[in-house]
Length: 316
Image (tube, helix red, strand yellow):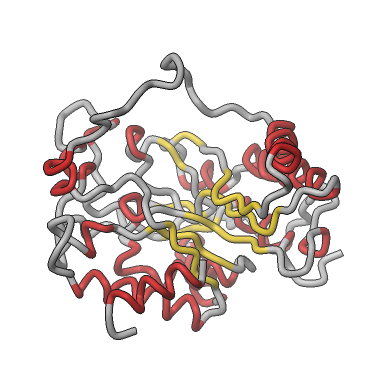
Protein backbone atom coordinates (compact mmCIF):
# COMPACT_ATOMS: atom_id res chain seq x y z
CA UNK A 1 0.00 0.00 0.00
CA UNK A 2 1.90 3.04 -1.30
CA UNK A 3 -0.49 5.90 -0.56
CA UNK A 4 -3.44 7.02 1.50
CA UNK A 5 -6.06 6.25 -1.13
CA UNK A 6 -5.00 2.62 -1.41
CA UNK A 7 -4.88 2.39 2.37
CA UNK A 8 -8.43 3.70 2.70
CA UNK A 9 -9.62 1.42 -0.08
CA UNK A 10 -8.29 -1.60 1.77
CA UNK A 11 -9.74 -0.32 5.05
CA UNK A 12 -13.19 0.10 3.53
CA UNK A 13 -13.09 -3.09 1.48
CA UNK A 14 -11.89 -5.43 4.11
CA UNK A 15 -14.57 -4.16 6.55
CA UNK A 16 -0.40 -17.21 18.11
CA UNK A 17 -0.28 -19.02 20.62
CA UNK A 18 3.08 -17.36 21.47
CA UNK A 19 1.52 -14.19 22.86
CA UNK A 20 -0.87 -16.11 25.07
CA UNK A 21 1.86 -18.38 26.40
CA UNK A 22 3.97 -15.37 27.33
CA UNK A 23 1.04 -13.84 29.21
CA UNK A 24 0.43 -17.06 31.14
CA UNK A 25 4.10 -17.42 32.02
CA UNK A 26 4.27 -13.81 33.22
CA UNK A 27 1.22 -14.26 35.41
CA UNK A 28 2.58 -17.50 36.85
CA UNK A 29 5.58 -15.59 38.15
CA UNK A 30 3.32 -13.24 40.09
CA UNK A 31 0.88 -15.62 41.77
CA UNK A 32 1.30 -19.04 43.34
CA UNK A 33 -1.47 -20.75 41.43
CA UNK A 34 -2.45 -20.12 37.82
CA UNK A 35 -6.18 -20.71 37.15
CA UNK A 36 -5.95 -23.28 34.39
CA UNK A 37 -8.69 -21.87 32.18
CA UNK A 38 -7.48 -23.86 29.19
CA UNK A 39 -8.38 -27.13 30.93
CA UNK A 40 -11.64 -25.87 32.42
CA UNK A 41 -14.95 -27.17 31.12
CA UNK A 42 -16.96 -24.19 29.90
CA UNK A 43 -20.72 -23.88 29.86
CA UNK A 44 -21.45 -22.37 26.46
CA UNK A 45 -25.20 -22.72 26.86
CA UNK A 46 -25.28 -24.95 23.81
CA UNK A 47 -23.49 -22.35 21.69
CA UNK A 48 -20.60 -23.14 19.38
CA UNK A 49 -19.20 -21.74 16.18
CA UNK A 50 -21.21 -24.40 14.37
CA UNK A 51 -24.40 -22.97 15.89
CA UNK A 52 -24.02 -19.98 13.59
CA UNK A 53 -24.15 -19.91 9.78
CA UNK A 54 -21.03 -20.72 7.81
CA UNK A 55 -19.03 -17.55 7.32
CA UNK A 56 -20.47 -15.78 10.37
CA UNK A 57 -17.80 -13.39 11.65
CA UNK A 58 -16.75 -13.29 15.30
CA UNK A 59 -14.45 -10.46 16.23
CA UNK A 60 -13.33 -8.05 18.90
CA UNK A 61 -13.43 -4.27 18.77
CA UNK A 62 -11.58 -1.19 20.00
CA UNK A 63 -11.11 2.45 19.06
CA UNK A 64 -7.97 4.41 18.29
CA UNK A 65 -7.86 6.89 21.17
CA UNK A 66 -8.77 4.21 23.69
CA UNK A 67 -5.94 1.80 22.86
CA UNK A 68 -3.25 3.24 20.60
CA UNK A 69 -1.33 5.67 22.80
CA UNK A 70 1.33 7.83 21.08
CA UNK A 71 -1.21 10.65 21.23
CA UNK A 72 1.34 13.41 20.62
CA UNK A 73 4.07 11.56 18.74
CA UNK A 74 4.97 10.38 15.23
CA UNK A 75 3.24 13.37 13.68
CA UNK A 76 -0.19 12.92 15.21
CA UNK A 77 -2.12 16.16 15.74
CA UNK A 78 -4.44 16.86 18.68
CA UNK A 79 -8.00 15.59 18.75
CA UNK A 80 -10.90 17.08 20.68
CA UNK A 81 -10.25 14.46 23.36
CA UNK A 82 -6.63 15.48 23.82
CA UNK A 83 -7.90 18.89 24.91
CA UNK A 84 -10.88 17.64 26.92
CA UNK A 85 -8.85 15.26 29.09
CA UNK A 86 -6.49 18.04 30.17
CA UNK A 87 -9.22 19.87 32.09
CA UNK A 88 -9.02 18.69 35.72
CA UNK A 89 -12.12 16.79 36.79
CA UNK A 90 -13.32 15.87 33.31
CA UNK A 91 -11.95 12.31 33.51
CA UNK A 92 -11.86 9.95 36.48
CA UNK A 93 -8.43 10.22 38.04
CA UNK A 94 -7.54 12.91 35.46
CA UNK A 95 -6.46 10.07 33.18
CA UNK A 96 -5.57 10.52 29.51
CA UNK A 97 -5.05 8.34 26.44
CA UNK A 98 -1.49 9.58 25.95
CA UNK A 99 -0.14 6.06 26.51
CA UNK A 100 -3.29 4.01 27.14
CA UNK A 101 -2.39 0.36 26.42
CA UNK A 102 0.15 1.25 23.71
CA UNK A 103 -1.30 -0.80 20.88
CA UNK A 104 0.70 1.45 18.55
CA UNK A 105 3.80 -0.54 19.53
CA UNK A 106 2.18 -3.76 20.78
CA UNK A 107 -0.18 -4.46 17.88
CA UNK A 108 1.54 -7.72 16.97
CA UNK A 109 1.07 -9.08 20.48
CA UNK A 110 -2.59 -8.07 20.38
CA UNK A 111 -3.24 -9.59 16.95
CA UNK A 112 -1.55 -12.79 18.12
CA UNK A 113 -4.01 -12.88 21.03
CA UNK A 114 -6.96 -12.51 18.66
CA UNK A 115 -5.68 -15.43 16.62
CA UNK A 116 -5.05 -17.59 19.68
CA UNK A 117 -8.55 -16.91 20.99
CA UNK A 118 -10.05 -18.08 17.66
CA UNK A 119 -11.46 -14.73 16.55
CA UNK A 120 -11.90 -13.97 12.87
CA UNK A 121 -11.75 -10.19 12.73
CA UNK A 122 -10.79 -6.97 14.48
CA UNK A 123 -12.82 -3.78 14.35
CA UNK A 124 -10.39 -0.93 14.89
CA UNK A 125 -10.89 2.77 14.23
CA UNK A 126 -8.78 5.22 12.26
CA UNK A 127 -7.40 8.16 14.20
CA UNK A 128 -7.84 11.01 11.73
CA UNK A 129 -5.56 13.32 13.77
CA UNK A 130 -2.89 10.71 13.07
CA UNK A 131 -3.56 10.89 9.31
CA UNK A 132 -4.44 14.59 8.98
CA UNK A 133 -2.83 16.44 11.92
CA UNK A 134 -4.34 19.73 10.74
CA UNK A 135 -7.74 18.26 9.91
CA UNK A 136 -7.22 18.59 6.14
CA UNK A 137 -4.34 19.10 3.74
CA UNK A 138 -0.96 17.52 4.37
CA UNK A 139 -0.96 13.80 5.10
CA UNK A 140 1.11 12.42 7.98
CA UNK A 141 2.66 9.40 6.32
CA UNK A 142 3.93 8.05 9.63
CA UNK A 143 0.28 7.62 10.61
CA UNK A 144 -0.55 5.91 7.34
CA UNK A 145 2.44 3.61 7.84
CA UNK A 146 1.13 2.55 11.25
CA UNK A 147 -2.22 1.44 9.86
CA UNK A 148 -0.44 -0.29 6.98
CA UNK A 149 1.61 -2.27 9.51
CA UNK A 150 -1.45 -3.12 11.58
CA UNK A 151 -3.55 -4.22 8.60
CA UNK A 152 -0.72 -6.17 6.98
CA UNK A 153 -0.02 -8.09 10.19
CA UNK A 154 -3.70 -8.85 10.67
CA UNK A 155 -3.89 -10.27 7.16
CA UNK A 156 -0.72 -12.27 7.77
CA UNK A 157 -2.35 -13.86 10.82
CA UNK A 158 -5.70 -14.47 9.15
CA UNK A 159 -7.55 -11.71 11.03
CA UNK A 160 -9.89 -9.70 8.80
CA UNK A 161 -9.67 -5.91 9.29
CA UNK A 162 -12.93 -4.03 9.82
CA UNK A 163 -12.20 -0.30 9.75
CA UNK A 164 -14.43 2.02 11.75
CA UNK A 165 -13.98 5.37 10.05
CA UNK A 166 -14.82 7.56 13.05
CA UNK A 167 -14.91 6.93 16.80
CA UNK A 168 -15.18 10.32 18.56
CA UNK A 169 -11.59 11.54 18.09
CA UNK A 170 -12.27 14.46 15.74
CA UNK A 171 -9.18 16.47 14.76
CA UNK A 172 -9.14 19.56 16.96
CA UNK A 173 -8.42 21.73 13.91
CA UNK A 174 -11.80 20.80 12.41
CA UNK A 175 -13.60 21.54 15.67
CA UNK A 176 -11.97 24.96 15.86
CA UNK A 177 -12.73 25.74 12.22
CA UNK A 178 -16.31 24.51 11.96
CA UNK A 179 -17.60 24.23 15.53
CA UNK A 180 -20.24 21.69 16.45
CA UNK A 181 -24.01 21.32 16.25
CA UNK A 182 -24.56 24.77 14.74
CA UNK A 183 -27.88 23.67 13.33
CA UNK A 184 -28.59 20.89 15.79
CA UNK A 185 -32.06 20.30 17.19
CA UNK A 186 -32.73 18.03 20.18
CA UNK A 187 -34.94 15.10 19.26
CA UNK A 188 -35.96 14.26 22.82
CA UNK A 189 -35.38 15.08 26.49
CA UNK A 190 -31.91 14.57 27.89
CA UNK A 191 -31.59 11.57 30.20
CA UNK A 192 -29.48 11.00 33.28
CA UNK A 193 -28.63 7.34 33.69
CA UNK A 194 -25.96 4.79 34.43
CA UNK A 195 -26.53 3.90 30.74
CA UNK A 196 -25.62 0.25 30.82
CA UNK A 197 -27.96 -2.48 32.01
CA UNK A 198 -27.99 -6.22 31.50
CA UNK A 199 -31.06 -6.88 29.36
CA UNK A 200 -30.36 -9.93 27.18
CA UNK A 201 -33.89 -10.06 25.77
CA UNK A 202 -33.21 -6.59 24.35
CA UNK A 203 -30.77 -8.20 21.91
CA UNK A 204 -33.54 -10.37 20.49
CA UNK A 205 -36.05 -7.55 20.46
CA UNK A 206 -33.95 -4.94 18.67
CA UNK A 207 -32.60 -7.35 16.05
CA UNK A 208 -36.10 -8.67 15.38
CA UNK A 209 -37.42 -5.11 15.16
CA UNK A 210 -34.81 -4.21 12.55
CA UNK A 211 -35.72 -7.31 10.58
CA UNK A 212 -39.43 -6.55 10.58
CA UNK A 213 -39.29 -2.77 10.28
CA UNK A 214 -36.58 -2.40 7.64
CA UNK A 215 -36.98 -5.44 5.44
CA UNK A 216 -34.44 -7.70 7.14
CA UNK A 217 -31.25 -5.78 6.31
CA UNK A 218 -27.81 -7.29 6.69
CA UNK A 219 -26.64 -6.57 10.25
CA UNK A 220 -23.21 -6.61 11.86
CA UNK A 221 -23.19 -6.04 15.61
CA UNK A 222 -20.09 -3.88 15.78
CA UNK A 223 -19.74 -3.91 19.58
CA UNK A 224 -21.40 -5.53 22.57
CA UNK A 225 -20.05 -5.93 26.08
CA UNK A 226 -20.06 -5.07 29.76
CA UNK A 227 -17.42 -3.91 32.19
CA UNK A 228 -15.97 -4.80 35.56
CA UNK A 229 -14.65 -2.21 38.05
CA UNK A 230 -11.20 -0.91 37.25
CA UNK A 231 -9.81 -1.46 40.75
CA UNK A 232 -9.93 -5.26 40.63
CA UNK A 233 -6.64 -6.98 41.40
CA UNK A 234 -5.15 -9.21 38.74
CA UNK A 235 -6.51 -12.48 40.24
CA UNK A 236 -9.92 -10.86 40.76
CA UNK A 237 -10.00 -9.41 37.28
CA UNK A 238 -9.09 -12.68 35.59
CA UNK A 239 -12.04 -14.60 37.00
CA UNK A 240 -14.87 -12.63 35.36
CA UNK A 241 -17.65 -15.23 35.56
CA UNK A 242 -20.38 -12.57 35.61
CA UNK A 243 -19.20 -11.33 32.23
CA UNK A 244 -19.13 -14.89 30.88
CA UNK A 245 -22.78 -15.15 31.91
CA UNK A 246 -23.49 -11.83 30.21
CA UNK A 247 -21.96 -12.74 26.86
CA UNK A 248 -23.47 -16.21 26.86
CA UNK A 249 -26.96 -14.84 27.49
CA UNK A 250 -26.66 -12.12 24.84
CA UNK A 251 -25.30 -14.50 22.22
CA UNK A 252 -28.11 -16.95 22.93
CA UNK A 253 -30.65 -14.18 22.35
CA UNK A 254 -28.84 -13.17 19.16
CA UNK A 255 -28.95 -16.77 17.97
CA UNK A 256 -32.68 -16.91 18.76
CA UNK A 257 -33.28 -13.82 16.63
CA UNK A 258 -31.25 -15.34 13.80
CA UNK A 259 -33.20 -18.59 14.06
CA UNK A 260 -36.31 -16.45 13.58
CA UNK A 261 -34.86 -15.11 10.34
CA UNK A 262 -32.77 -12.05 11.27
CA UNK A 263 -29.97 -11.51 8.73
CA UNK A 264 -27.02 -11.05 11.10
CA UNK A 265 -23.60 -11.87 9.65
CA UNK A 266 -21.17 -10.75 12.36
CA UNK A 267 -20.65 -10.01 16.04
CA UNK A 268 -17.86 -8.04 17.73
CA UNK A 269 -17.15 -8.24 21.46
CA UNK A 270 -16.14 -5.01 23.19
CA UNK A 271 -13.35 -5.13 23.73
CA UNK A 272 -10.16 -7.11 23.26
CA UNK A 273 -8.26 -5.18 25.94
CA UNK A 274 -8.95 -3.18 29.05
CA UNK A 275 -8.39 0.40 27.95
CA UNK A 276 -9.09 4.11 28.39
CA UNK A 277 -12.86 4.21 28.89
CA UNK A 278 -13.61 7.86 28.08
CA UNK A 279 -15.04 9.73 31.10
CA UNK A 280 -14.33 6.74 33.34
CA UNK A 281 -10.63 6.75 32.47
CA UNK A 282 -9.10 3.51 33.75
CA UNK A 283 -11.74 2.87 36.43
CA UNK A 284 -13.67 0.51 34.13
CA UNK A 285 -12.48 -2.70 32.48
CA UNK A 286 -14.24 -3.92 29.33
CA UNK A 287 -11.45 -6.17 28.05
CA UNK A 288 -11.39 -9.87 27.36
CA UNK A 289 -7.75 -9.40 28.29
CA UNK A 290 -6.66 -7.80 31.58
CA UNK A 291 -4.06 -5.06 31.20
CA UNK A 292 -1.74 -4.19 34.08
CA UNK A 293 -1.49 -0.42 33.67
CA UNK A 294 1.87 -0.34 35.45
CA UNK A 295 3.75 -2.35 32.83
CA UNK A 296 1.02 -2.88 30.16
CA UNK A 297 1.34 -6.66 30.27
CA UNK A 298 -1.65 -8.55 28.90
CA UNK A 299 -3.39 -11.41 30.78
CA UNK A 300 -6.34 -13.23 29.13
CA UNK A 301 -9.35 -13.47 31.44
CA UNK A 302 -11.76 -16.36 31.95
CA UNK A 303 -14.01 -14.74 29.34
CA UNK A 304 -11.21 -14.87 26.76
CA UNK A 305 -10.87 -18.61 27.27
CA UNK A 306 -14.66 -19.02 27.14
CA UNK A 307 -14.63 -17.44 23.69
CA UNK A 308 -11.64 -19.54 22.67
CA UNK A 309 -13.55 -22.69 23.59
CA UNK A 310 -16.84 -21.56 22.06
CA UNK A 311 -15.19 -20.53 18.79
CA UNK A 312 -13.21 -23.71 18.22
CA UNK A 313 -13.81 -25.19 14.80
CA UNK A 314 -16.17 -28.19 14.75
CA UNK A 315 -16.88 -27.71 18.47
CA UNK A 316 -19.90 -29.82 19.43
